Length: 261
Image 1 (cartoon, rainbow, N blue to C red):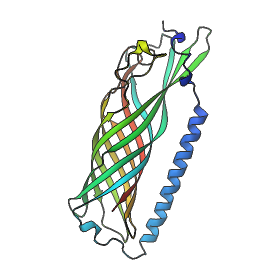
Image 2: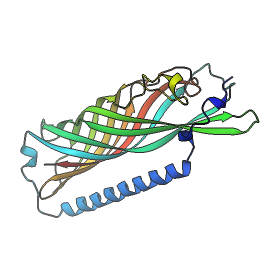
Image 3: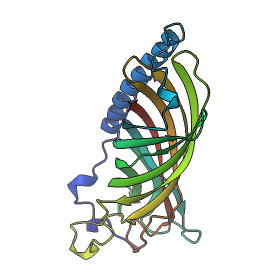
Image 4: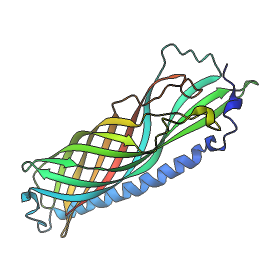
């Protein structure tokens, strides 16, 4: 039977659910205010003179993205796991992060753009494990995984024609990623406590939508996107944190602000 003495002494696994909720609320409140401001700009732009009139006739252009993300896991439990050990339950705990990326956009025609957006994605994910103590009480242990992904996305942007200085669009595509902070090669026996090990390489499908706002000197965009990981990134080494899991796939919800010139 697994005993809690192996990992309950770690100070970095204390559960601070209230603090996490406050930080996530502050981040998304800030991003929501930014999105509302963009909607106001869009409403105004429909009655203003047309900015950057020749922008859509250029074969290509460049820019950069600033994004906020909330990341978690899609997980599956092992079919034969009965929770007969001290582990009682496993739960997701989504955490906030951010992205920085460059953008190169190729205009195929007036409605189709192909975008290459290499960048860094700082994604934190948490899982809450509840263990039963020998005295019958419950001990919640929060396990946090920190990743710094080097992303190589290829995205197809499907945009409508301009309505003044405003144009909505949809996004579909995929990307390959490599975790530059992966602990896949860490020796568990040399750690103070167990960690949840994840593979270095990942891939995902991306879906989203947004809107372009043509300002006097540059084009500004706001977009919402969801990423669904395609690979099982769990490294199964039968630790108290991995033994109940069969698969782990990443997922993220992202709001991005794009600046193109």
